Image (cartoon, rainbow, N blue to C red; front, side):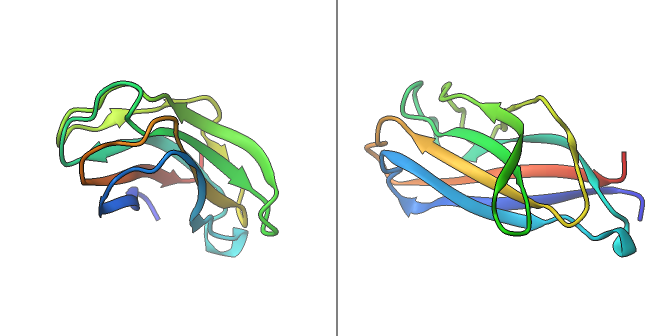
Length: 129
């Protein structure tokens, strides 16, 4: 079970980024029988076009219980500008996520983007510590 795994969570598929906050369950962490917890190694936002500061998505990566109750912040990425095709990295504050937990993406859009956009939150992790 060695290796690095990637999960991409779409937050915009050709539409505008609408102001507000949206929670999206990204994936469930494997149970102990399947390897247990994970370590988040990197996350950020990928967009197809540049988005200016303030209009770029702000992301909070959260760990949640199986019932969806938030029990920790993994990391954050503010609404700094993005460059097309380049990962706008978030800052990881607590990389370990216990087995059986869920990883949730909280997308906060302070100002709507005026143009159609394709945007993904990319999460990279490895099994274990």
